[in-house]
Image 1 (cartoon, rainbow, N blue to C red):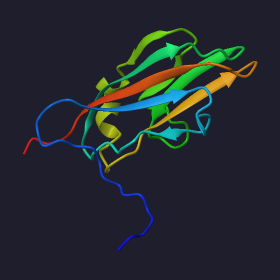
Image 2: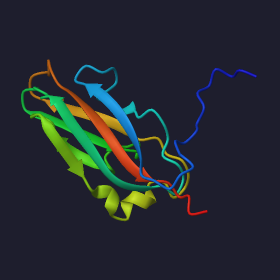
Image 3: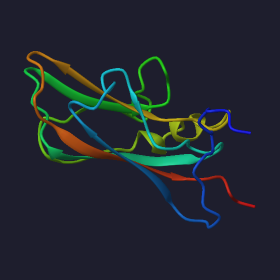
Image 4: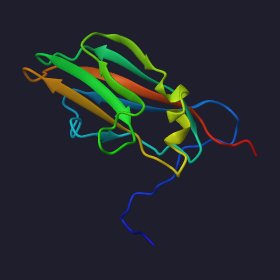
Length: 140
């Protein structure tokens, strides 16, 4: 029976290999200031290895241009916190390699979000791709 409610299936392959989630974003993506969701959930017990942001077009707000990624609804910053995106390039957070990497998914599937914060004059440009690398708990 259709419920018109989005499913909540975590992304997990059967093989033992590193998994990833990818999300393209831009300065004008709707709701980017409050958080845009990644396309899937991290499965319960997954170990987050690292989070990468590849900036393809520099963000150009007047003073501050930062990206944060996480699943903590208060600030979405427990996987990457306040990464400057005012220049093109690849930026990596290994915050997932600490105990935080497993703590995020310990209680069940979690949905990560990305937030872009800007101050000063409003941005008129900026684009990038965010990637979360993780290993699901499939020791079985």
